[in-house]
Image 1: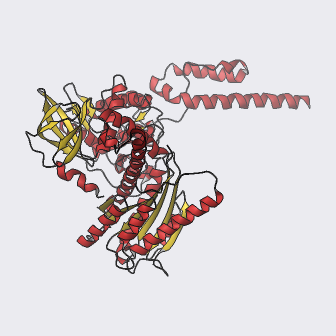
Image 2: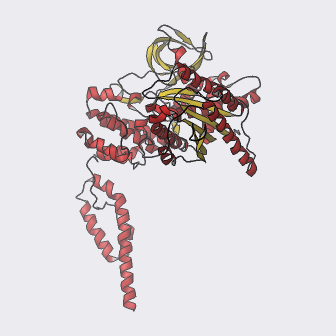
Image 3: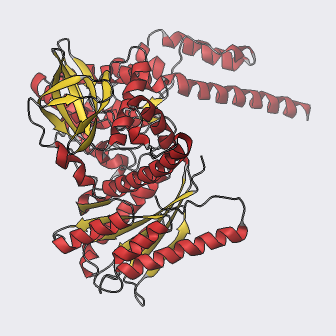
Length: 340
Length: 245
């Protein structure tokens, strides 16, 4: 069974053709072709004086799959990432049955075109929007999957990022069904193809790199090294370098974490030295030298900006524990020595 | 719903068979035994002629599987897409059979109203995630495949990466045709991981004719041996999905 046959008997649908659903009896008038993919063709159509996008395929199961995804998006309260579903049906033609679904028509330039037209200053805003939408999806147990700039449309004004293809959306914990190599962490050797939030965040990082390399690039040496090299060659990416690298390494647990990192302006490379936050550990009573050390550090922190505090929190905990243990052991040995 | 283990043969070739029995007939035999045959034609500087194209399509048709002809560059994505598509096809067949038993008549998923179809599709998706999979890969090592072998290796490693992300277990086995001494040679016995392919592939030589038919034959007997070994151990009463889809 050749896969290429799928589109052959669908490509001769001309403007003015009427598509009528067998089950729900809705009628759609074809206006023009919008695009095509491996599973079907998308047309602009009119229904009751409104525009909709109609996806047709003679592979009924792929239509059903995508409809399932759109339905679950609809269950995610407040989600505006994917198009809203309008209708699902079958169209009986003389040449056979064609399954289709009608969805909201999302109009606008694709992500990369928008950035080229309006400038790189928009990258940050649109990525933040995308991360908010992804977070909503993630906390509802989904992974977007096949995230790539061709499927991201910027509508508006006001400018809003939307997605027009949901073929790759997968339940978290399962294997990713569809992917595009450049945005896939498996291809770069930086993770598995199991669906989790990190998978999407990796794709977002690659999309950010993509803005500086519109034609993408092939894997040569692969891994983090090649990607880091590619980032460093483009000055416009340097301010995002830290965030991108962290996302590529899977260091952000949630989309919100990555969002926060971008907002906090965490663009410069981090300093490894320790600093304290206002949260002082309750263990300070145990040994005097430790308390003294902590107190002086607490005094230090007031002068420091919020961004370094947020970053150092994790390192501080480990250091604190080590400090307390060392001091206690020292005191204990002193005591033992004194007893001898 | 018990589906048993999904069995697939993945044939990667760059041309027509020119030795041994008709591969299309062996492929049809595979289908009868519950094994799906998928074929990928890979081109690089060359192009596969009409006869080769038709043969590739017909082998997959007879084997109830999926075929695709691509340039070497797209091989990785194609291998995983073809395998997935074939899995979904087989699982849909299984689910359709169950539906027919429940609903009576010859109704398939496609005849259900769209809303019900969605629910059934979820079942198929879940099966696709959890079902056990056995894939036997047959790699053409005739002379013209020489420059394509590194890409084939990459594609196979990528396939194992994709499939191992599933919850279901996977087993792979790799054969080449022609082999050094025989028409077909086993490179890798049944294993869940394909990492060792890197060293094995580097030692491969290409050359000779293309005995596709005998290669498929050998694949069938490999599946048979695997099955009889299992029944010797008889740990569980797995139902083998042997009826034709």
